[in-house]
Length: 153
Image (cartoon, rainbow, N blue to C red; front, side, top):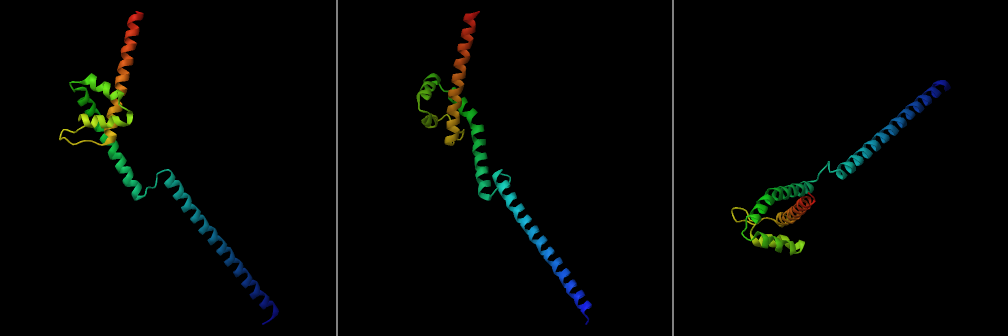
């Protein structure tokens, strides 16, 4: 083997080593990019509720069911309350009852019970009480406005 062929082999090994180093460097960059992409996807997905764990899905379903119950039963409860014979007395008692005890007052009065006699959740009773109080305030404000406009005419 002459010197020139030996240098040629060394140069070929050097080129081959450089190619392998470049390939390994690119593989490391690709791996790092994939890892960063996965982590970014998880962070963004969970922070925006785009990705949901089974426990979160269960909680979300339970919350949706509670909201549906409230939406369905509040009008029923309000109608029962307004149909009671002592409406004015009950409304006065409801307004004087502390806000955190109003659901109990509604429950004890039975206005929130379903037709089969079942009681409803505390959140539905609370929403019913809030609706009754807000509606009463709105009715009083409307009556005062009507009275004021009648006096001004």
